[in-house]
Amino acid sequence: MSAVKRGNDIAVLTQTSGHHQVSSSGRSALQKSLKEGMEEIDLSEGYDYHQDYNYSYESSIPHEEPVFQHKSMCMKEVLCVFLLVVSVVIFLLGFCGNALVLWISCFKMKKTVNTTWYMSLAISDFVFCAFLPFSITNMAMEEWIFGRFMCKFASSVMFLNMFSSIFLLVVISIDRCVSVMFPVWAQNHRTVKKASVVVFICWFLAIGMSFPSAIFREVGTHMGSTICYNNYTLYQHGHKVVAVSRFLAGFVVPFVVIIVCYSIIILKLRSNRMMKSSKPFKVMSALVAAFFICWLPYHVSVLLELDHQKYDHSILVAGLKVGTLMAAANSFLNPVLYVFMGNDFKQKFRFSVLSKMENAMAEEGRTTSRYLSRSSSMDGRASTHI
Image 1: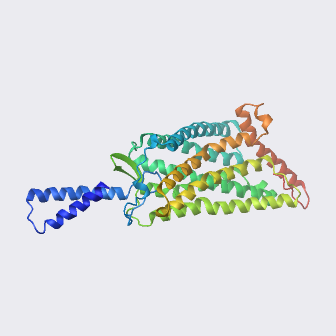
Image 2: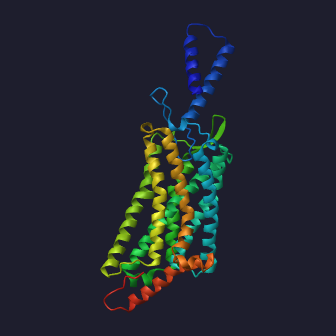
């Protein structure tokens, strides 16, 4: 880098000054050049043109450049143009779709525990989509123009969406498991008020998990462009701690809990010879599957990035871009799943979009009510139909 070369030239001049006298004006120029060189080196060490991670190290292998030193020409690359177009599509579908879900769940349907879960998921995805234009603009212009506050805030919103979504999916899975195992208890204790408290706790925990973005995100200048990057220079192990903690809290632990809950449900269904799941079960299973399919590539790319010296930087760059895009796609898949998983194929073309979405979400409430009523009237044995 030019900054490193300047630093080497400065070092030579400094050594030479021990043998020859330097004028006062020369010393002033030398000190100014040294200061500028160190400032440029410091910024380069903290830079990553990705919006998620950077590194702070100097390569010990000659001519080996870390990932963050790669200067992308985004609009000239086919992959980046494709990602930009898909990002715009995700924004349009996610913003409109989640707005529609919010309108139906808030104004067109009776308030229930199930609509509380879905409404909270829609809020999370809607807010995420509302901030996508910042990333789209940054990708198109290859420069961050929104200032330091939005650099921190926009990134925090992304991870707020990530953790609030997974926490809510865990809660939905636990709620379904409890309804199957303890139907009478669930009928008496599942209330909208309690569900709202649980949602608040999920959002509170998600805010805490998104805090690293508010701490480490900074704005700087690199190669003449203003960038929004993660600055871990003051915290040596910050990158690894953040990546691993997000992987465990946002993927591994929730995955185990969800798998256990749905395994219990399947075993219960089999024990009562109910091999086919109901439509609500399909909807929630599809939501869970979509979340993990969307987020798995992102987490794999982030973990591989921890040992970035072992991999070609272009592969990591492409992996992070594609992984981030797939994660963003989850924000518009939830409304789609509400519509297309709630009714069979023929019914999708017989009703309006509003009717389909309302029927899809109301179906779970109706089947759950029938199931709980049957369970309370049975003597000595509870039905497992949900």
